Image 1 (cartoon, rainbow, N blue to C red):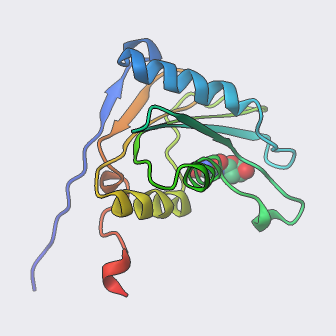
Image 2 (spheres, protein in one colour; image 1 turned 60 degrees about the horizontal axis):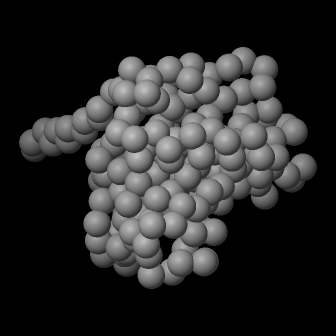
Length: 160
Ligand code: THU
C-alpha cells in the first residue's frame, strides 16, 4: 500500500488590471459575452473567451433550457463552437467570468466538472496546454497553466 499525492497550483491575480494586457482583453470579452447568457432559470451568467493560435477569439455564454439538462455551460458552448469553425486551431488561452443576477459572485468561479472534462479533451487533442483564467463578476482572477491542475487523474482516450 502506498499513498499517492497529487499537487496542483494556481496563480492568483488581485484583479483583471494585474493580468497581462492580452489576457485583460480576453477577460473583457468574456465579461461582455456573459451578458448574452440565456439564464432565465438560474440567473447565473457565465462568459467564456478563447484565444486561438490563429489569432482568432471565440466566445460562448451559458444557454439554459426548460428541460434543465438540455442547457449548456459557457465553456463548452465556446469550445464546441470554436472547434466547429476552426477545427485545426489550438486553444492557447481561455478566460471565464461568472456572476449571478441575484447575488454578485466575487470569488473566482472555476469551470464545472463536465466542462473540465471537455477542456481536457481538447488539450489532449492539441497536445499543448491551455491557460485557463477564471473570475467572478470582479475581484481576484485565478490562473491555471493547464487543465491538469483542475482535473488531475484525467480520463482520456488512452484508457479506451
Ligand atoms: N455554468 C456554466 O456556464 N459554466 C460552469 O462551469 C458552471 C455552470 C452555467 C450552467 C447553468 O446555466 C448555470 O451556470 C447554473 O449552473
